[in-house]
Image 1 (cartoon, rainbow, N blue to C red):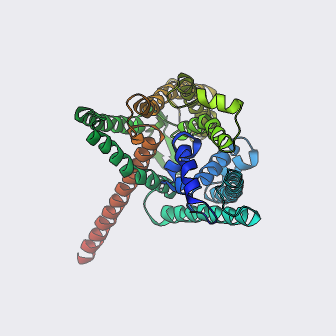
Image 2: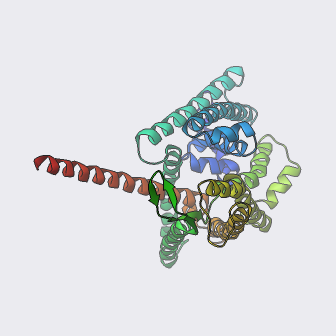
Image 3: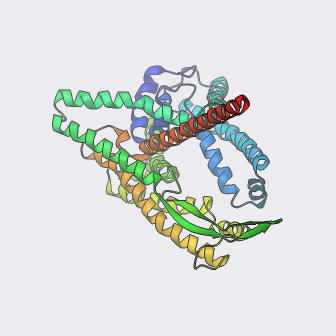
Length: 403
């Protein structure tokens, strides 16, 4: 709990906020730290926002785009810019939280500049520590540090949700058959997510014969893999944040005794309402195409293939290749958007109509858990193969020395 807070008033306000507002999304990513107003309440979200902003700027600003193409040195500079932007966003968000808490009734025991300063320093310090910890995990451990921190926050909330569901079954609110159906459904949804995340469309690429010095190298065949879900988990996060923002603003305004147009909008955008479902689907589809267009450039890919002598059978290198890649990418993005829509609507229907509070049956949380687990397992396999190869090399050298 942050210093100078009223625990009872905080619990009453955030019990509603973390269930219906955008703070519920942050609370899920932070492992419940938002609801407790812990020092990690901001979690790693400012860094994620900064990374997305820098990535978008690298596709718009020529200076950032040039740094992106410089290789390892350019990535280091972009990472440094991301850290600076993370600090700025964290300070802004922490100060805004302090102002909001100070103006929300009797939440703060001793309001004033000292409370704002201590709240800002505490929350920013927690975020920067998590940023440092994530970088250490990435450089020294296995997997992406940022994803692992978010993964641990989501998994930390799962036992409480499971206990709540089992308690509903014990009280008779949920039948035993429905509980078994939930278990089977969870396994099927996870298997479906794994299948779709591994799905790729491979475009055949041929490289002609080439002569280097006095040696002639045979032509090679390769593939250009295009993931079915190129945008990842960004579309659901953006869509959820935008739709839950009016609800959060309305809740804080009601806590201060005010009502208005925002409250009316938040009523229509509540979970389970038809308008919420329609806008949720529309925003997911929009951000799927928007973010895919940002992170993948067919023209640049076609130019790189042309520079290295690669071509697609039956397609002229250059502009025709870029058009073909863009056409294929658009088609598979339609499938990817449909997949994200189905997975994200499952928890909405389960919570609204079946009254089952397990959010890990689908949505953003399940996508993050599945993708992080798959990435970690793939890196573990890579390390194991590397160690096995090193062991084979050492054995071969020892046998050679004995001879």
